[in-house]
Length: 114
Image 1 (cartoon, one colour):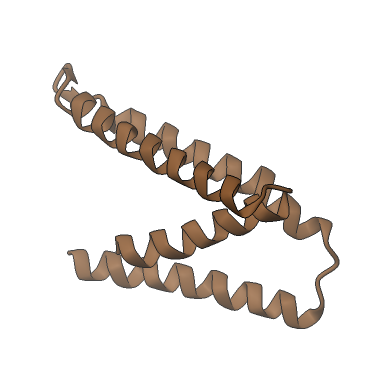
Image 2 (cartoon, one colour):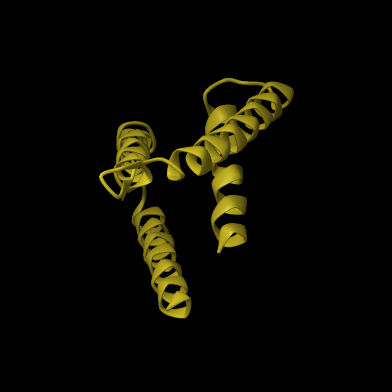
């Protein structure tokens, strides 16, 4: 599941950075910095998960806030960039196919996880 998420995610991030004017080496450095930040975030999540308030794990409310932040970023930055350009009908169909494929992969992973 991580492989199917992270590889396209990193390629997409790299493309966004290049499109916004970074050189290839700058984009790679930024990607490395974000990878380091994600490892630090993972460690913080593991540490926070060990704390409990009234028998409720802190990660119970930290994870939805984090997910909301990612949704906000994608809606403000990525979707706005897609809307800014005038896509052809084929581009729109390809975007919808990729979106549906991503949702389909999430459904398959969630079914296999049970």
